[in-house]
Image 1: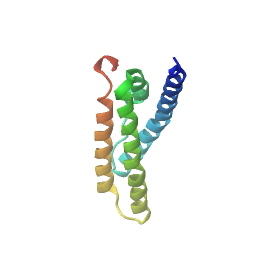
Image 2: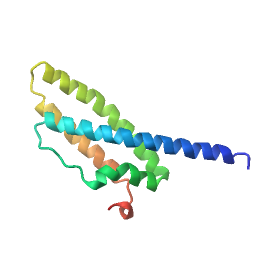
Image 3: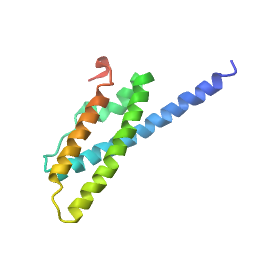
Image 4: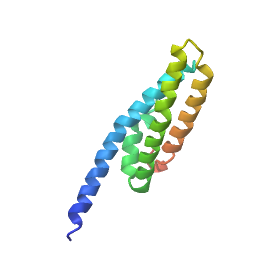
Length: 124
């Protein structure tokens, strides 16, 4: 019984991390939109599944949530320097379209992989 409080603290920490994922996920979608714009692509309207991903993955919990949290961190690690590099290229007056398109494709693939972590029964 003595380890019950520590289990509660662990669960609370997971929920805080998952809440942080909400903010991170939204920031990633904004970064993705910026990259799409730099790639010359039309605005992508987010579907409900993408918008609800943090809620759905939090409901799935367990290993899926753990993997999703790591995946979001990995996407941030990919997008931050990528967006900075694209903006630097654009600031120098060079065309970032091809590089932006490559980053956009990587972003979409990574997002798709994370979305696949949501069990089918949880998808609207």
